[in-house]
Image (cartoon, rainbow, N blue to C red; front, side):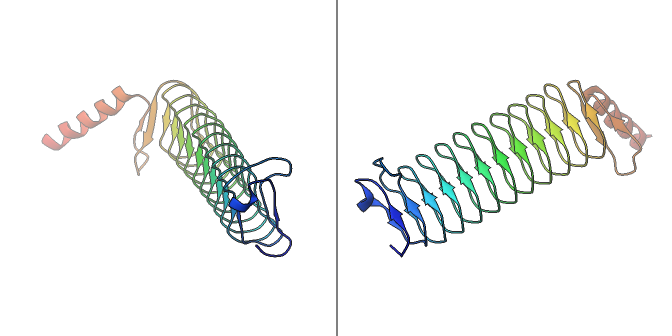
Length: 214
């Protein structure tokens, strides 16, 4: 233990605190196995919580982990923030890999990186990008900017200002594509064909096969 650190509770002897001005445990509570491996002003407040390093990071509840970075918070059980800046994993088994100002708000939600991304849907993911929002359950945004996946089981691959707004909708990419029914839209590299439904995709494939055989 270094100077300025505080180890709280009757089980403080089970804590590890190698930071500077860091805390393990909570005053008036008896938590075990809290660890701060280094850094400054970090806190590991519950049993088996861990902060690896960095500055002003918080692992607040049982089995939460913050790897490092600055101002990150793992709020609920089994939540993890690997690093980055001002990221928050709020709910059970939620995850933020890194980046800046990303938030995983609900159970089994994940933001892998990027900035200002938010996941509000259970078991949903934002891979990266900027200012993307997933509100639907079991939904996914791969990246891009200002995309929204608000329908359950919806997907936005990337692009800019795209929206998948109903069950099972998919937008592959592009710009300003709102999808409000259970459809799929792709655009080929020459912008020659747009496919909105699976039947259209099948018909396009058939037409290319026929053209190749003629």
